[in-house]
Length: 378
Image (cartoon, rainbow, N blue to C red; front, side, top):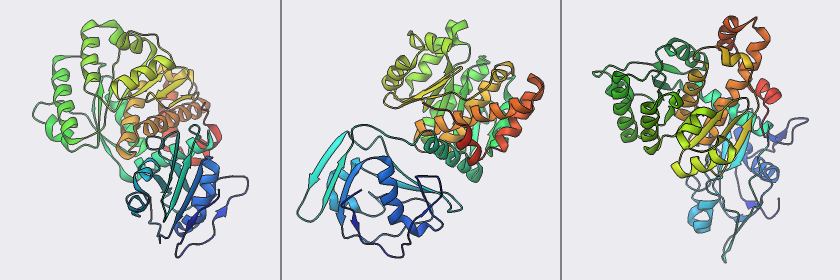
């Protein structure tokens, strides 16, 4: 890091935890040193010379809007928004670049200030950085208790509801024509699961999607068994054309939905073409938005022997979408946590029956340390 000149007040030196190259702070006022440390870790060349007083609020600062730097640095700062995410106990902070906003290479100068951003590709601290992101998202679910309205498989409702409750979210399930409107309008996210594809659910789904679009709510499509039903597959394609926040599906379902082979490259093309997140699940889960992609290798075979396990995982993604504005990060955080919980549950279970209960307990007890120790991503 070089060339950083930001005048700040009430800032303390950053504290580093032994054995970790990321910055750790005991007080949110340490933002300047945290900025310097973490930009070096992220691996970007960034020079800023500004005469700008800053204060770090309790949770997040946006260097573009909150501090008004956009006025000084011009359009280039719109490509370089950086956000501090502070843990609610103020014992952890992370600075991460927004990959939607940072181009491959940008240079700009002016007589009064200088900003140069250079990058040859995205860098993330995997798996530790991704484990921290997952932990942050799961903590926000517990803190905010988002309500997820689930239109889902009739055999999956109870287990899905229990899994959401264990994660700290609030489930609702009605498909009544008299209730679907207000229930969806007041929700924080919506799950559309096609596991039970009857007339009532189809009508409820159409109403829910329209309301979610009107309210700007995140919503996810889980096109269960579309490879076995042409009518279900056609309906799923219509739903994807309405641009859900995410689509969670297995390899057979993806092949039917896309007409392409089920692999990472095809998933990326599909995600970019439909402006959505594709979560392609299996032995290794792939999460992509078309530009960013990650493979998550956590999980256990017992997860495939419990009815509604995948449905519950999709519901957890919805809860994450409700609290994390970046749908790619939300999806990978939820699936990462779900996979790690599956591994922990398998250690305690004697078979599929006890595993189903242990899975709920494991998700409920998931914490940052466990995620940092067990997450396997590439």
